[in-house]
Image (cartoon, rainbow, N blue to C red):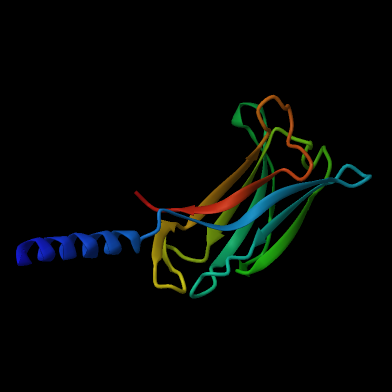
Length: 161
């Protein structure tokens, strides 16, 4: 009986330890909010995670139009930010800017580190080890030929395999 209890206790401890490492964590949202009368495209990037033990520092947040066949269009870069933050990107109309509504947009968040991965701790002590560059794609929905107004994609940190 004592051996069964010890075995069950060990299994419970191992499962709790395994659950302390997160698989993914939503930290924000990228939203296409439309165009102004001049044809400038507007996007918001909201990074407002409430459960982090410390803010995440980013050295750059890039907004890039992704065209047909994966071609990369104009890039717009912000200055450094820390969470929580809310950014509004205005991408000028062509020829120097986005051709939106577009097929896809990429937001690239580059954390302020020289390491390829970073470990982030939540207030409850759980952690996630993720890549220091996070790519978020906002793509046209099935059956659509362009991103729709108010369409969004979550900014998700994924655990390193």
